[in-house]
Length: 336
Picture 1 (tube, one colour):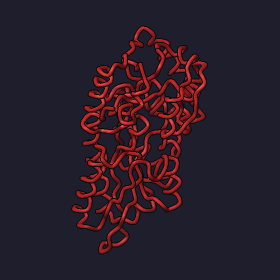
Picture 2 (tube, rainbow, N blue to C red):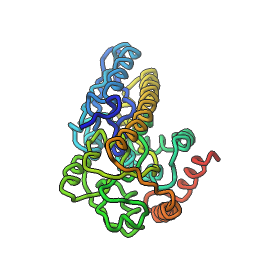
Picture 3 (cartoon, rainbow, N blue to C red):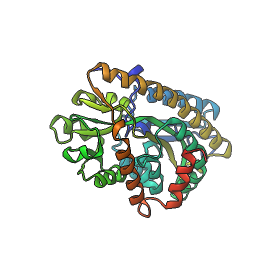
Picture 4 (spheres, helix red, strand yellow):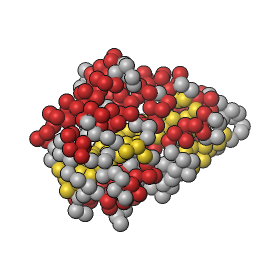
């Protein structure tokens, strides 16, 4: 068993979780406000450590008015459970992946469509241009988007060689229960996915219920999925993304000054996490190769992957996001 590089845990689906810490709302300047924050990230992970440091900074900069109390390691369930508990007032904030974000604001899933964002530079451009737009969407849905974070480069990992999209037809790929994007991609290429929650994947790999998982190298190490895998794509198929959100009702309890502190510290925490995750994901990729996982070159079939991605995006227009939103994201990724 190997450890995630420098104790970083991040998974493609978890990646998200790894984000910024949420700032606590304080209804009264004299009274401490406690923010209950749920995350899939283990408490001893890199994110857990950054979250603790962020919590100390937040409390200091608000002069003790706000405290972040986090619930780690999926103790509050999966991302759908986080959202349900926030809506019910049982949790206040959470770190979630784009899949979880899509449960709240469906169109945000445009950022996870295949072929749209494949490099960190493209990701940065899209975030810079579209954050105000998505921020309003989350606000309208009753949440405040604090900051984005990423969880490594998404790759196709498997127990059988997957070189071209059609290879997925003879496989049993895992699909996260709440992920309509990869499910549509599999439909386009004629494959059938196996829908499971993240905690169920390791056992499914053991029993051969699934033999393909889309994840990042750092995620495969963190969840120990790599111990059941033999192959991974050399090229990435996107960036695993996530964000920290807080229920707007809780956020609105904060004074304008403490709201500003919450957001600024969240952004600083996210930036620190991104630096660590990007470094550790690259290290995890090298570690996996040293551990015997073969990196497959899908380059010769890139045109097939791009066409499947294009068709997937087209099929989702009107169902998940509008054409204008997709075009806006495509232009932002290209720097237009």
